[in-house]
Length: 135
Picture 1 (cartoon, one colour):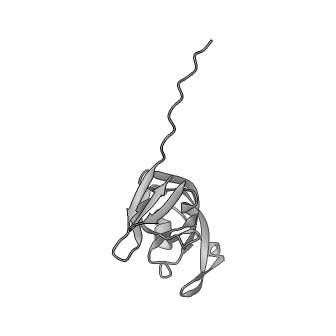
Picture 2: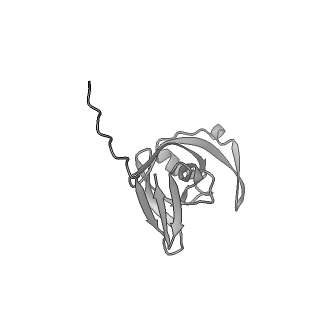
C-alpha cells in the first residue's frame, strides 16, 4: 500500500496593510493586468473604477459605443463602460476577473479600487489609520 502523504499546512493567507495618507485616504500602488497603477481604495464604490488613460495603459480597447451605462456621480450622471480586468494585484494579493467601469479622464482623476475587488478578499478592515486586506 502507498503511505499517506503528509498533510500540508494550510496557507495563512496573504495580507497587505495600506496606511492612510494625510487626508485619510487609503492610496496605494496596484497592478492591473500587470501594469503599475496608482489608485485609492474606496469602500463606498461598488466597482473598481478607472479612467480612460488608465484603461488604455492596461490594454483595454474601448469604442464610444461601449459607454452605454449611466453612472451617478457627485457631478451628475455620466456615461461609463463596464469592463473586466483580468488580474488586479496589490502586494501579495491577486484577484482574477474583477469587474470595473471606465470613466472619462475628466470625470475620474483618481482610479478607485471598490467593492468588486474588496468583496473577493477573505476580509478587509480599517482601524487606527490603516486598512488591512486579507486574501
